Length: 149
Image (spheres, rainbow, N blue to C red):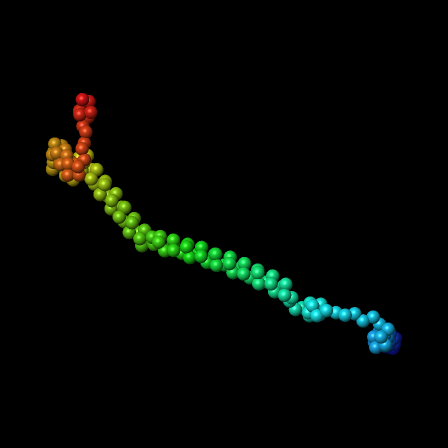
């Protein structure tokens, strides 16, 4: 332990003599003195310069412009989504399509003679009723015999 203390004492004395010699040179004027600008001191302290602040400002302006553009796009998307049918609307449309299918199927069965009225009416009655219905709709039906003329 005594050897360690002497080494430490020797190191401290060496450091003290070096510091004192540097201080003596600075005080005596023999040492070289350098001038340091305020900008350098500011940089060493970690302060931002005017150019750094301008760069940051420019980047923030660009970033805010991009965010505003994205917000505008999102507003357009939200308006488009609002106009789309919701789940209840789709269910209602599905029910309406199903009722149309049933109506068309029943009408086709009645026209071909397979419906509930087929037993009550003869083929001639069905044909005459169909012709009357088509006349009401202003539809002209061409028979096979008319096409052969």
